[in-house]
Image (tube, rainbow, N blue to C red):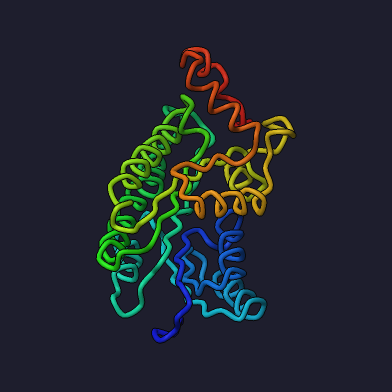
Length: 259
């Protein structure tokens, strides 16, 4: 558990045992952050925590929680509000996708995804932004998606909410010393698509990003005070085109990344 007397900044990362969240944990530890790691699997959390302590000499707290469960989510909210152990950076990274289209998915699965992608981001941001605003410092990185700019069902709709919320919060709390940024990666080489039972061949090779590279770019953008981080040239082009190409045309591509 992080030492309450430590002068090192503390970052809380959700979905911290794999992929983008794991890369955030490593790169923030390398920067000297103590960490609070949130994920569902206690064994994996403990394994990652031991590796981070050994490699970087930082303090690491593990907080097992399923963010689709309001009671477990509440424990993470309480940790963010703890005045004795302030959190300087919240990384809302936890998430998952559904392979099928809306009517092909079970409604409980759709609701669970909404809970993690929207409700958890809302509640954890609320828990973090209050203390940060009072202290006059802190930040939130919300991991969104390039899908937010595209018509791709409920996942895109949820990520569009994350973008809108993040942009509003960035402007709302900037004068209080708090930074908020939406990170919008595209296809990334992580467990995310494997859990959806989607193969790498579902999208062209040039679209697949390295998690460590995109997190390094995200942290550089955060340091610069950017409101949005869209890693890689190809996805900057795609998001730019998405603003001018009609949705009825873009919607024809929604099978990309689902096979």
